[in-house]
Image (cartoon, rainbow, N blue to C red):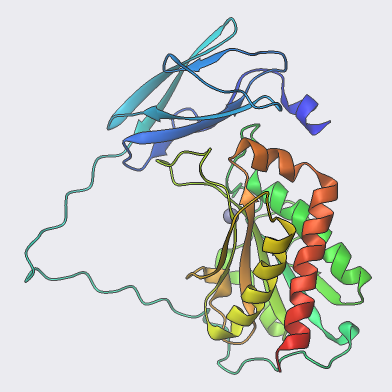
Amino acid sequence: MLFAAAIASLTIAFPSAGQSLPYVEKAYMIGAVPRGVTNLTVQAKEVEIYRTGAWATTVDVVEGLNTVEIRCGEIVTNHVFRVGRKPVAATDDPDAPKPPEKVWEKLEYCADEPVPHPGGKNPSDILIFIDPGHGGSDTGALSPHALCEKDANLLQAKALMKVLTERGYCVSMTREDDRSLVLHDRPREAVARKADAFVSIHHNAPGAGQDPWKARHTAVYYWNDLGKGLSDAVVARLAAALDGEVPSKGSLHANFAVTRNPEIPSILVEVDFMTHPEGEEAIFDHTRRAWLARAMADGIEDWISKEK
Ligand SMILES: [Zn+2]
């Protein structure tokens, strides 16, 4: 139903008209065609149309203004966007001063004492915070049919909340509808209520110069050892659930603001790539969303029972 509603005309989801990309030699483009349209050319190159009507390709670009011709059936569109200037090459002089290394500070309102591991507690005494990434004016990434990441994240987060609630856990969400939240404030309530875990849900997109057909994996990110145990457990279950469909990059370190928490085990899950036509189709599958939620809940429970 969602697809039927979304397909009314040619969609160009990324880059949007007038968007400014960083410097790249090739840019990815994604969009969708009306059902029944079988011929699409972008920069005079034939582009494969996925069964949902989604398409994804890369185009050659130059610095400054770019006009890309898209032919879709009878429709011809000249799509205009910008590409930034090439950065000046770094000097080869070994004595040249180096830029200081970025120090990634913890969230300022977090204490340094970790909450006790919840092993041995009853599920009803364990508080899991779920954070559906982005929201409001911050749409996050876009899929070929211009589904916003903020909405995909909320759907998956609600599915996870349902499973954990059914298993008896106490669950709170940073948002339950479409609203803007200040990034650094997202874990604030979880910290105030001494939550046992903080799980941020996202869907991924490639860099502007990457091929969207080649970018599809799942991964879970942590910032410190406190988050790593949870990250390892969740990614193991997600990887097993997605085996044969989506490769797993495993448990990875990253400096995401919402995970820089010395007090509460915190992770950020990149469930899938929503820019990939198959990844987008997967997001609309509510059965799959439920089993991914069960896999994540299984991972959280493995972490609760394993670690002391
Ligand atoms: Zn995101």
